[in-house]
Image (cartoon, rainbow, N blue to C red):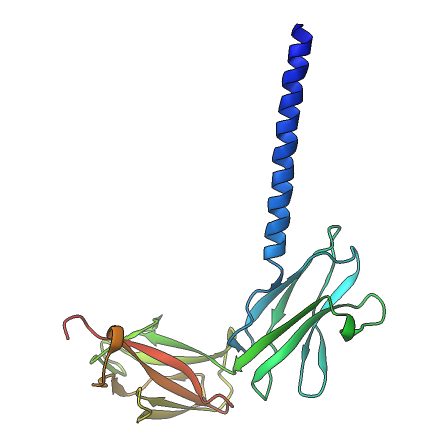
Amino acid sequence: MMRKEVKKRLGSILVVLALMFSMVVLITQSALAASEGVSKTLNLTYGETIWVNVSGLTPDDDYEVWIWDTTGWETNISEDTADAYGRVTMEVEVPYRYALGDYPLIVIDVTGVPDPGAAVLNQTIQIYNTYTVKVKVDGNEVYNLMHNRTYEYGGDYELSFEFYNGSDFINDWTLEATLYDPEGTYVDNKTVTNGKWIPNIVTFDYVGDLPNREIDYWLEVVPSQLRKAMNIQILQSLSN
């Protein structure tokens, strides 16, 4: 009787463990499926890093990421070999496109003859920015500036704009940067040759409506087809 009771208990434990294992497998598979695709597809900047993940592929086959250019595919942007579970993960640096806009991105098996028509992943990405602009005050990156505060070169609040391609600092291009208020009125301009603009003096004193106590100034950077490259959030002081 004792042995039978032990067997019954062991059987129950094994059933519970089997159910728990199947739940873990299901959760893992769901997590993998949820992570498939492209990590970011909207409002991409030249030089920015994104990730492409695909599963359910043929183990040990070679796969590549291709992105459409003006007249054809730019091939072998990134590559990976599918693991034993048929998964690939590829790091992709967003390529330069003279004509900013939407571009198809595919993943194809290149073990044999590559066939774009048999892509295992089809996505559209938006390459919408040529430049990344970092706003800094006294050398520290900030994500908003203060309304009615004066920023001055060499002063207590020194404002600077730094220009990047993805993570690469642009110190060998000639750019034209122009600052506008929320209504599009000219504020200041600079021809930038070293990747950084430090305005001599600027006060964000636009007196229009401040919905939710914030407004956006615009920084236009050319050469670029998208002229308004970024917005600069201005916060109204609670004491104003």
